[in-house]
Length: 308
Ligand SMILES: [Fe+2]
Image 1 (cartoon, rainbow, N blue to C red):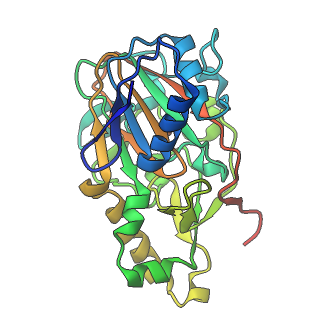
Image 2: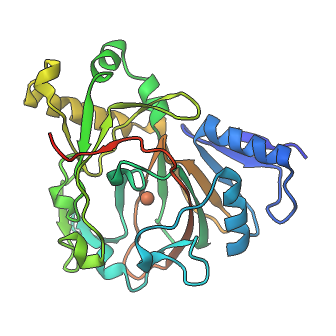
């Protein structure tokens, strides 16, 4: 049976024509992997998935990685990272956006980006679909790079950018803080939720994808902090800040982003070396459960900043 590939709006593709509960041939595995590199974001619908099947299917794309945050892993299946709205973690994950109380909203990010060694990819499965809201957004940063003008491409080719890990969203410099208020249980420092602290991570502003060779604009709003030594590249601090503001606005453009509305039986796989993602969150009390498997990042794309 041949796979059918249908492009999604603006970024990624839906792939159908296989059943996760039937044996998948080596040939089809290779085709799935190459589609992952071609489109960065793959949607699979109407699959009858259980935890074992999700883990087995994810291994097509590489060895799996456990998340450092043990509190979110499934006891029976440590390969599964559990993302839950409407549960006991809500108290940490609730904040106010223009007066509206929202659980689990996350800005555009790449997983483990703050470690300088992001995981290669991840696969999300909807276990409980939220009654309303709860979308996951994906953005293709290779497409975003390609769409830049030549002058900007030349300028950013030599620049590096630093990411500063922070628990408090209001300390982040490039997220949209208009009308934002933390919730009473929002963590103030990493140890509040058992998280280690991280030194700054530095990336080239343009990263060459280790497998496909595509150029990826390494700009994601979460934790984005500054251009490294801008003056050495002919930019004032003010110009470097304006450049980052312009690039962040560019990455958010609808032409590179796809927002997924979850249905039962959906799985979404993305290439975390190329695509960013975000979540829109849910209203308080709404149940949403997502299981994530994580494909190991075996290459350090950035560097940990020990001196500047
Ligand atoms: Fe994430």
